[in-house]
Length: 418
Ligand code: EPZ
Image 1 (cartoon, rainbow, N blue to C red):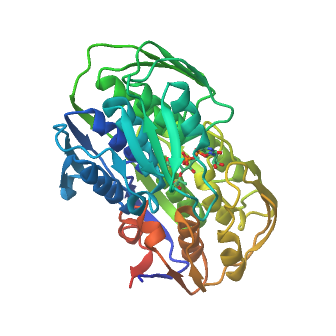
Image 2 (image 1 turned 45 degrees about the vertical axis):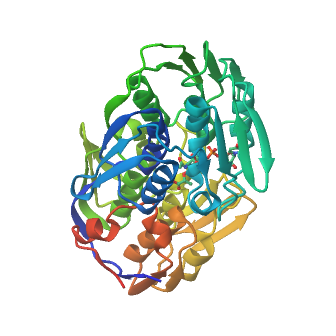
């Protein structure tokens, strides 16, 4: 198994180009089942994307990857389509469950493995199934699979989500694409990645409007089956590099982003004392000292994202005082804490609240990655710590960060993969 070796305390300076968003690409790849031909630009070629490509090819789509240009060309001639998403592909990449909505709305049936839980939580899909049943699907669970049918097609309706879910909102949107009549979905997640999916579906001839947390899908005839789409930037990768720059940067430009989309994160980081200069498509982070402690609650967009919680925690280990983070989205997303404490941090957790006492001097250590975002928090700690940090099980990192060490090395970090 590969590991990362980091020599800490090397001041970063230079420019980082942000990749396309993994969490926009995955639902858009699931939506590409609805096309005959789609060309996707700025796709991050990370492990989860390759797993989703494998799933789409298993279903019967043809996919051409041009790695150098991060372009995927996807073809669906509707021949030999398997409306099945097998356990072996869904268990490692839970977003595979998103093909459920597309298969159901286009082919009237789907058999999709229940994704099962992961390190950060049980990750149920009851809200996904709730929405599909509302649209008239007949759903059975058998031998660990979701068996969905809609022989007479799906019928538009009003869906009122009892709680906010990104994936369930995406599956409902995908299923509503061919539903007869109008569908109104209330209490939706409205992450930027969902807006990118809506852009993609509207290019496919859907007529989707979003207002507040309500999304309306009007019935539309003029479906278009050949489209191009440029995937939005990865706002979580951006936040991760802004925090790295605040921890150990002298001057870092983070380019190819839309700072308006990460307003909440930028405002919170500025309050902590991070020096951020904002331009139209980039931010510049200057050396930040005298960091202030902060109280943070993770929330659905536009609140502070749970996917940046671990990274922010590393920054707060360097703040002058006691900070508090409440993880309100997932039930077990503090697995980076014991590893950070082994590096010298002073963090106590009680249920879903972490108390971080700073500033603490971080020392290099051998540590273990446990999930995607916890892994990158260990990289941030390693860059900040004295001496050498060795991070094991970095396959977690490779699921969602494209060229991480290359991007850091280009800013003078001393980091290598072995
Ligand atoms: C998406 O996961 C992201 N993944 C996650 O990013 C992100 O952390 C999460 O949204 C929250 O922003 C992708 O987009 C591929 P949810 P998702 O449904 O859709 C509960 C990363 O690091 N829930 O919004 O699975 C659920 O257990 C990943 O890139 C139900 O109870 O998240 C959680 O507590 C990690 N029933 C909460 O809702 C359901 O049917 C939010 O989950 C669905 C979810």
